[in-house]
Length: 211
Image (cartoon, rainbow, N blue to C red; front, top):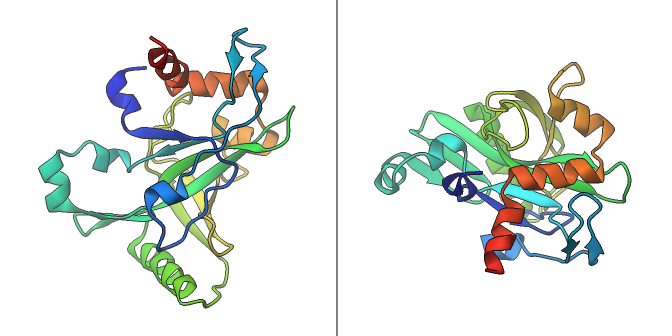
């Protein structure tokens, strides 16, 4: 994996990534370690593998220059607007493990309509004021190219705005033939988990730390 691509994604070892309107990015992306084990795929000892991998920005925003972002983008940890005409929210796509407890989560950006963007913003505001919000199911499209898969940019998804403090859940339609849809429905093995982390450059980065 090229190093410039690794810069646009971040990894965290967490089971759930809470969302609160007042938390900082560091507060909300806390790391936790899983148990030490010997990997049956590569034969090496790992202190614990990531169960989350998240993107900092939508790909089109990431591609902009420093000044370009200043001129064209409004964003925070949950929402993003490009050129006051394209709208994004950050969600979580879950892949259950087939041979272990828990799940692997992709933290991805979804492009949505202006109305759906504003609906989510108003829900965050209501939660900050201590008010409950109803559940909504929105339509959107994936705004990141996810490592380890054929093209994911523009793939249609459903977005569920649910429990307070939790990121929106992202689901591929059951009719989808994309590998993400199959793995979301059927889960991923230890070998596939390892393969996805390898595609993200995780093991290369870990090796660099020891050299």
